Image 1 (cartoon, one colour):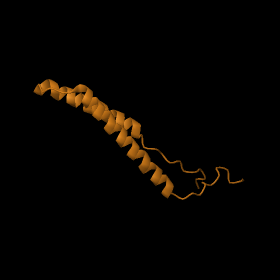
Image 2 (image 1 turned 180 degrees about the vertical axis):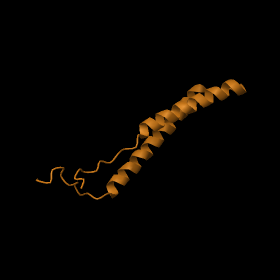
Image 3 (image 1 turned 90 degrees about the vertical axis):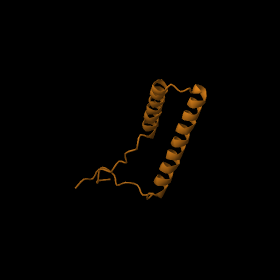
Image 4 (image 1 turned 60 degrees about the vertical axis):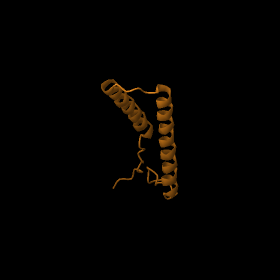
Length: 82
């Protein structure tokens, strides 16, 4: 029997959002080079960072709601002699 309390793993939202930002920047830069269209760079980056912030806020709210719905019971102690 396993007496160790289960540890909840957290989803790396920050890493995912940062990776998505890099992918979007790379795709936009590549398409800008291949299709020769103009881009308002400051507006693009402001929009990109704003959307990333919104995604992280929504993820934090969802995580807090998920944590709030779980039972508030403490896990059993690792040592059953306590």
